[in-house]
Length: 167
Image (cartoon, rainbow, N blue to C red):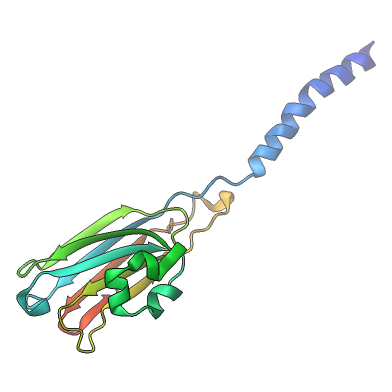
């Protein structure tokens, strides 16, 4: 009788225990990264005309970095194909010295492509591709990590083009 009770009691507790072990070892879906882009503009950028800036979420930067200016300007979806996840734009106006863009990324985004549509290219750096930092997906270290995949970038926009600067 005691032996039967022990087997039933053990069987009653072993399944929930095994289920708990299996779920504890699984990893949760990583959080969607955020990005914060701070643009600092020179007062005389683009000869006083508004400067159109496009910010694109990309799965890869290869197509973005190899496409020509006019194709990206006029047909970004065609030029980038499936690597383009999102495309937003804003204008830096004459006298507007800074602009901050903060948003959530998309789960598949690995790069942010930034394109400045200068009136005259004249050798300016008109595009940048910034990678999202790798986030540690180990559930054990989640409480420890300080980098959750957030991208923070300061970008100088002047007569020479765009360039990221260290924070």
